[in-house]
Length: 146
Length: 146
DNA sequence: TATTGTTATACTCTATAACTATA
DNA sequence: TATAGTTATAGAGTATAACAATA
Image (cartoon, rainbow over all chains, first blue to last red; front, side, top):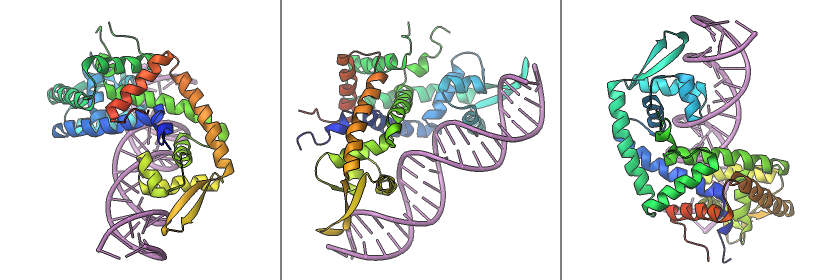
């Protein structure tokens, strides 16, 4: 049984699953002092990237469902990190704005997230870490940022 | 807004999540004709690696809970792919054996899984694909197979 | 008619606590 | 007392279907 677990450890599904589990654990811990989790930081990130987005636009960028977005925005609004405002141009839409607290949570969260990710990638040097991300982006068909 | 989604696409959590989602979709489709999914193939893999394992041993290798393993073995047993046999040396334990059908499902499933994984990694050449896996193994602290 | 947000509902994966039978 | 398996239950995260308001 020389290659006992080889079948498992050569499987990309296993590697991705356990990488995600461990990374989530680390980032959740790093964000807990801010009262948010990784999913919420991701929402704040897309909302803070440019002008305010409607819920469905934000959901699209995150690759989640619009019904899932409702609860996420609910939670962030309850913490006063975002604010729903009806779009004057199309009153079916809620434009979701970051509050000052939300902008602060985004900034601090971003820093804490980066630190946690860096620790998770501790076994790799910076070139290798960048390489890992680049390979994943290429697999997913995400164009290289210029 | 040149780097519009940069904040997201540079985040390992986002990349891992979406890689796993797409890979799961592909492998699920590739295994569906065999009547199993990726998790079940993983169980068959650890059970087929050497001598029969108790449920809790198999759960440990997969990194899942023993209570989760119960339902997985239930499902596989219902499909006649595995068989629970009390361990004569310790009758609290169930040794889970692959049936002939289970061995066939493992072999065919392994082939289909590899094919699906290969398609998912289609944007990479073989060296890069191996590199991606190796980087993930190092991050997870999985020793290199010799 | 079509779309945005919402609600209700359900399904998957997971874990915790309590039970049973064995040790 | 401790452990393997089981059961009941509950919590995330997700999606589908149906509804109200608006386009």
